Image (cartoon, rainbow, N blue to C red; front, side, top):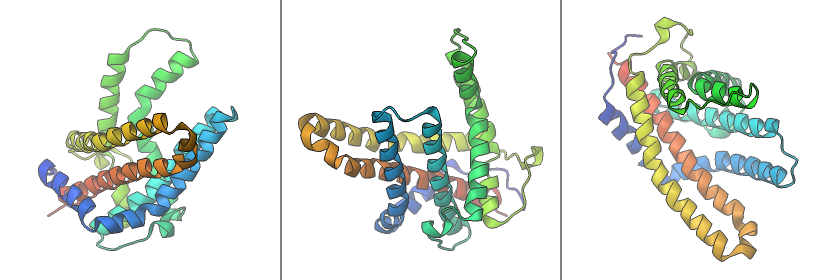
Length: 246
């Protein structure tokens, strides 16, 4: 594949949100299975935590399950944008391609989060008390950019294109992707905070009935996260198309 070695930040961002908004009602409908899966898993986790049954492994399992669901969503977005074909979430969920996508997604996530994980284990297991928060944050930004320099393995995997984790696989737009994903995250932070404020207000005013309808609020919250992920995967897809355009 011929590399253009550049992407347009404005164009990529515009196309990604246009993709989200186009047929928005259908996007909501298509996202229902993913949102329901995550909502059920979250409420099971919440129940286990409330009963003091949950362990660190339980929380880690929820994190892994969320990534598996996200991987199927990612494949659907890549297929629609890059391959111009529609594929259903339920068809991809736990498919061999989805599992392979998840494993690569997990590797990239560990690369990005490695400074935070090392800092956490150093403080918890090695009893290191010194706080190097500013250094950890700087390293986290750098490792996240490194991870984003490898992110195009995900759409390549979806399209059945060969890839390898080596220096040749590094793209030249990791910093721009970091900027794009930061912008998307901040934009979705606004509706998330508004929704959380409404949820807390309802919880305070209607304590007796809140626990009964809490799953409905969870569905709304995870729908916002789902739309956020759609936009993130759209950014990766359009950036991939732009980067490898002739």
